[in-house]
Amino acid sequence: MRIRRCITLLCTLGTALTVAVPATAATAATTPADGSRASGTDHRAGSTIRSHEGAAAPDTAPRPLAGVAGMDVSSHQGNVDWAAAWRAGARFAVVKATEGTSYRNPKYGQQYGGSYNVGMVRGAYHFAIPSSSSGAAQANYFVNNGGGWKADGRTLPPALDIEYNPYGSICYGLSRAAMGAWIKDFSRTVHARTGRHPMIYTSTNWWKQCVGDNASFGMNHPLWIARYSSSPGPLPAGWSAHTIWQYADSGRFPGDQNVFNGSTAQLRKLATG
Image (cartoon, rainbow, N blue to C red; front, side):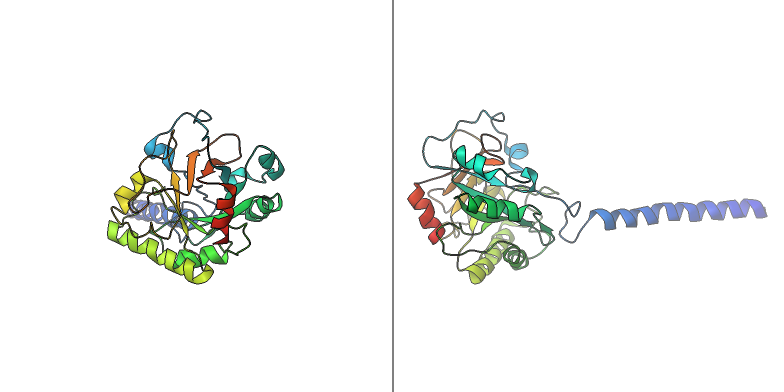
């Protein structure tokens, strides 16, 4: 009886230890404060678009005939050969700086500085995780880690990448009103810190689902629209025209393929503010 009781007790303790200890360790190792699966998680602009909205096959999307060609990059592209991208025709670049409040692009310096040094107009963007912290907290993290602006005619306004949730529910568990308020909080903080309203990267389908018919951002936030097709298509509420169109996630330049809706002079005017 004594032996049987000991075995029963050890089995009970063993089961408890087996369940509790690994679960705690796994949670600590894979769930940082901003909700990402791992501290090195890096979502590029448009990382959720193809899976939710579909797209033309890679490298087959038609190249826009008008506008200024450009690209956007993140750590996925590593050290970019900016001279080669310039020779291929890229004249602007948007570089990922941050995500949530714990991720910084380790290649940011090479990409942001390198694009500028080769002659491009460049800018920075932040991948938003609205479920993890306030818009103001993420805006401050962004500006503190590369998302600034200066009136040199070569720096685009800071950009907010707001798209499908890569971790769970499409709208990050927020109502349309709450999402609009989060974006406004981010925008207000970026404007206070830099003097510029952020450019907003999004897709029309996501905006309809998660922000709805809120048209308040169209007046003073340039639109960077994502649609992997032959045209930008219908735009979100509040915008009558797009500023940049991300039309493919692969092509002649490293990273995603973009076109500015205007001339080189107008691109520099946008950069100047």
